Image 1 (cartoon, one colour):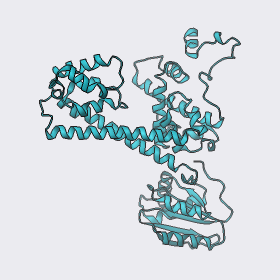
Image 2 (cartoon, helix red, strand yellow; image 1 turned 45 degrees about the vertical axis):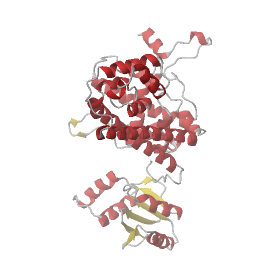
Image 3 (cartoon, helix red, strand yellow; image 1 turned 135 degrees about the vertical axis):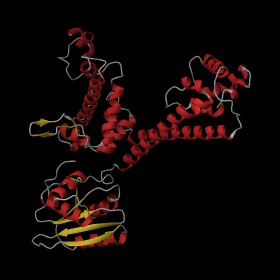
Image 4 (cartoon, helix red, strand yellow; image 1 turned 120 degrees about the vertical axis):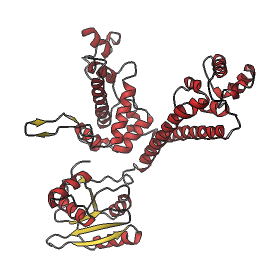
Length: 432
């Protein structure tokens, strides 16, 4: 979001303090000191009445509001549909301006509307980008739902590893693999305790578990290992028909359902954005998969609206800030006032990129921690630098409409013979 400088000359200024059930609206007409205050309930009748009132002025109307949960979305959509210009007012800026204007920390809805009106008059507003107008509503819902399911799945895995497995089958954890696989949960659902395995001969167990285990290398050896592990397990001797195991299976079914829902959302994202050029370009960046690309587009929209990558970094909260007063100067660190979901997405993409065999992000990370590989603070700074570099790269590939080019940064003139070209990481090691 960029600061607005396109306010019409002598418009009708409307400040709305958003709430769940009713909104306080303050209207300022040019040339009149007295301001009109009305209360608008969040019902269709009152929304239409507000539109009629503003339309009756027969003049340009600029509406400013502070985002409050998602309660501002319906009224903002209706006002934008009516042709009014909408401006967003930062919650942090509103709080600081209110404290400065009234020299107190009191807060109430009419006072907030007055402060918002003052901020509109002085141009301290931002441009409002409605997700529904810009075609981002579906992407945002997919991205947010995937995040909720992923968080719930993480909680499920923690519960599985810290409660159920230690009780009933502690040794089974080493067969778990990664949390994206479903076979381990399906296996536990059918064989939740060591007793459910050892109650049958090994050959019979191998036949029963063959299809459940799925496609594995050395499947026969894996099944034999599981059987031997179950025979020496220290798990509690709980009956397979007990209510406790029934609850265990209920939780396992929930976990499998979460895995299926996540896979369904990822496939739906691919179907929805499979031909989207920006989506395809973002996936060329190391560490950026379908869900990361979906989140970037859902949270940032069209990255071309950021004229410079510094604006995008500030939008993400990757810009640096320093607290200074007199001779005191605090430590320079990230402001973290931007979009937290974008910061997390670029951070996770950077973690994946630096673990790949060879790319520019891993090279930057290795050069950053070369001084001391064991320093955790240096590693944390390196991770932050990689995440910021990931954000700059995402902005660049969209802004220039070109795919990501590995090792483009820092590479010298291209040699005529491709066989003589040396990867960037090896070139650095050769010259160091």
